[in-house]
Length: 401
Ligand SMILES: Cc1ncc(COP(=O)(O)O)c(C=O)c1O
Image (tube, rainbow, N blue to C red; front, side, top):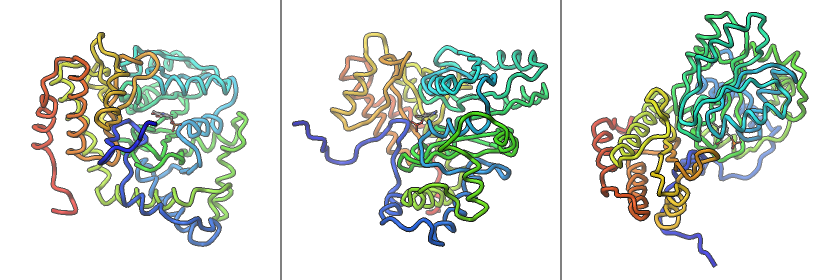
């Protein structure tokens, strides 16, 4: 029999689900409650207000849906679009790929703009398609802010500029699953019509809550959109908001309390500090990769992701073996390469509830695995590069200054 037990903590470095803070685990360790008692609407109201802060919106309407990121995608699309609508969607990795498959299943006319995996969304093509579309046949632009499969971050402000320069009314629909609450994200400033995330990513909660935030133009579109919607109808939620009951179906009480605790921690650290921490962890990881003599799958600095780094291995190593061996020998969980980059990259997730010394532990583990698999790495090289940077830039813990 295989024993799962390994002493000490598992080093969880997949790009979601991520480590959950003890405070959140404790907040969720509770019995079920009557979700129609006065306590839950009061809690929910505070959550809906605070969610807006992490999306950086004052005009958006958030929905907390019992689902995952995939359901949040579906909620976004079916509430705003009609079958046959022409939409532009960028394909740059497995998650944008899956979103496009969903868009096709929902019978939109998807104009796919593909990039080599490791590159960002091709915004020159977007600009020419938008400029050519004087009849406004394009109803939406769908984009994954941070492609988790390749560690590529796209420039949302640039997408907005293209739409504005052409006075184009297409809806701007953004997957922020591996970005919101970790990367700089500004729903209102970037004129995003719908943004979405999932609880198991930077919010550092268990999986199970999809959070969708709809701006005024998207809510307006939802009144006339003709896609079939049943479970995901926004108007069911809006009716409950008016009644002060908030949920059209049973929410997870534990996740609501967990979200309260998670948001409290984020605000205690300060959202800007959270984003700065991710930026430092991302940079430290990239310095280690460079010191190992390996390449980042993201081909240019402008696309480097501060939440996940996909590391390209030399052709004589199977990246799947890196992941397998890390887990078997070092109790370290790394992300697999997916689809087109399977076997070619492994991924280090550096998002959510994570600090500098945890990251250094992961980097030390990766070095040992690489050596195990015959890659000529100098033990300590990546750790030295990362820790030199971290030591120089680490701020005091705000609550301990
Ligand atoms: C960018 C992105 N979008 C969507 C998803 C799908 O989310 P879920 O697996 O929660 O359905 C993921 C999952 O990792 C993701 O990384």
